[in-house]
Image (cartoon, rainbow, N blue to C red; front, side, top):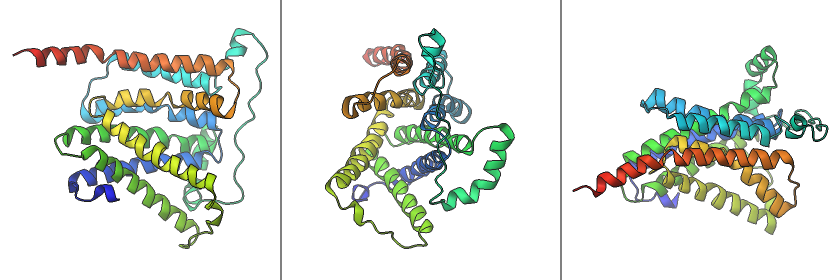
Length: 294
């Protein structure tokens, strides 16, 4: 909130709007993970690479570049392998595939008010098409996160001449996410704060600071900075590499095992990011040439 002091009202309102879409993605993600696996949830989230170009074309009239279509398809296949939807060992006949443990168990200890309100129609839809309720809810991720990319790109271009607009926009997004998350928690606890005494431990405080400042504020600010020159489609393609970095740091810090799917899927996703990046090189060269001309 202090970062919004003295900033343009229009910039702040734009950031608050983008925060609504991000919050929608977070809520759908949280509810989905109660009844589906993290692998499926991550794969469905990667549909952002398909959703963003479509929205950019339909809403803003931007052309869909063949290279971006190719990058999106490559990224989807890579995430599918990375998350175990396709088993490389089974395809190559290296060893028998290990059966998936199934969907995540439903959290019977607590039921969110938001989930309870939507349980009827969503459950009916899931049963009708033969998937879990979490799979349906997870579709809100590419919609929420993907649309936020397009709107952030729009506001970065609109306010590019306003000093400090990137930080103000990012701060406003975080304020929206924080306030709406707080209201959701208070509603579930009948408008009273739960006992948070267990959080007063050094390692928990460090975790909150890292996820709140580095993984959220800094990441959102960096995203806004990148979208001053990159497109929302580029951001979506790069966003699809998130499972790769999660697997890498899990191996590096937590000693988690790397299997064939992680190596192959991760390599494919990174190739998709490279395809998306290379597709912008001719455009950047043309802009440089135009600027150099008298």
